[in-house]
Image (cartoon, rainbow, N blue to C red; front, side):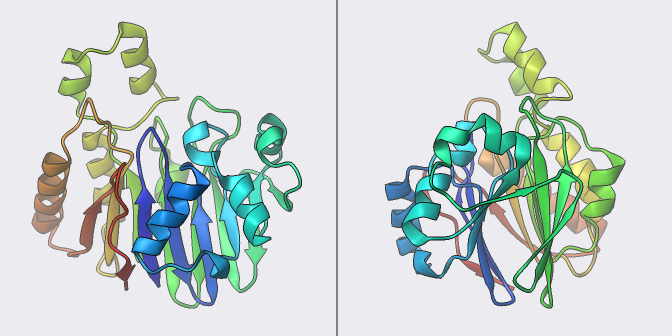
Length: 256
């Protein structure tokens, strides 16, 4: 299994996942040019990608989903509501619509479509399972539901949101309405909430972890790296390779 966080944050998100014989992009929120440049820096061949999975219709997740799919003649998987809402991005694209909560079979992988809460029309996360195990990506969600927790158990890899430090958010420069939206059930989970979820998900088979979608204004990457490593060390259950998702540079290409 190979994973690379090509971009993570409010300006663009893109995760590369190679599992079994299947290569996927989860979201494509950078420009097509920047996506291809970052793939090249990590030795990832875009012509070998088999599909793009879309979590929701916000521009930082779909900016180049359609253009990538058209250029390389691959399908885009998205919910029916997202396809309708973002139809201008997907013109002349092979669309594979799914329902939130369903399981999709593609090539030799099973893709669990996990419903989440966010201020978009039909947001989801994904759990992808192959003969090499389970990998999950869940970002842009405001509350940790029991369903999310149960669906994400037993993964070898997690791409998990850790958006903000609550004190930094509440004492920061954002207007009150935006602070309330971020903290709401349709916003983003905090560092503390992310660690609480990790407490439930940590197991000896967890080998790699990307802490994703960090706020540039209301979070510190070094703090998230340090507290996550310390937290997992205290749990004494697993010692995954921890990467902090970066907005401006591709992360390492991890192989587990």
